[in-house]
Length: 85
Image (cartoon, rainbow, N blue to C red; front, side, top):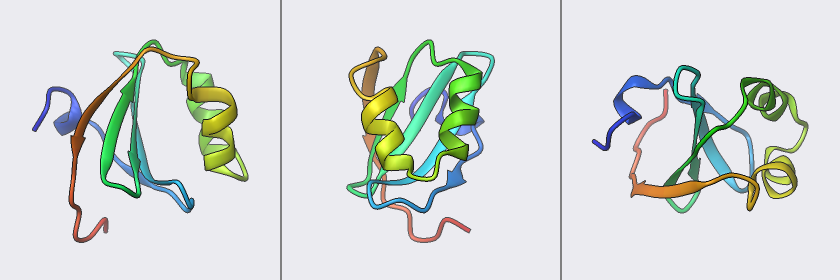
């Protein structure tokens, strides 16, 4: 698995766009898994913005307005997850 992914706890999301999120506070890195299976990580992501994201009524809308095109990012992998429990 790519560096960093093995040390984060994924939070399942109810979203039409996203399936899960994880945050590495020590590295200030946000990980997002999309329904496509793509996983992206966003660098220099503030912890308070992660809390706001988790509390947002629409995670997809929050992503589109507050995260996408706002932070340096990289695509990590396409993961197939059979069961998120």
